[in-house]
Length: 141
Image (cartoon, rainbow, N blue to C red; front, side, top):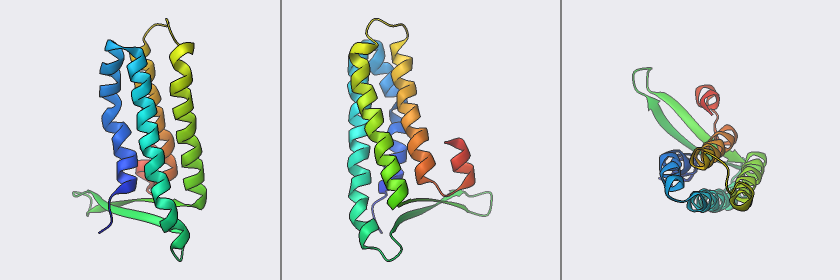
């Protein structure tokens, strides 16, 4: 059984959204660095799948999970190939840069905790779109 790398890429920012918001209540700068750290962790996780993508016969890294038990054990799968890994990495780098750039650019603006929480939610949606192969999960992203 391989480690659930892609599930972690999807779950870490999802779980972190309320913590980013609470950190932003104390210090917007801390929330920005928290979002940047989450993006860096996800960049590392996506990059860790690249050797598997390059070495596999179909050039795909795939994880499958049972999702909804009541609907005949509905499965959802997360996968990365060369194109989706590239676009996911570009998206994560842009989230990282946006979080760091917005520290000074957004200084003094209203409702910064919500801004950084929404930036974290944006990373979930963007990366989720490129990871999922399930239409329902794609819709949620």
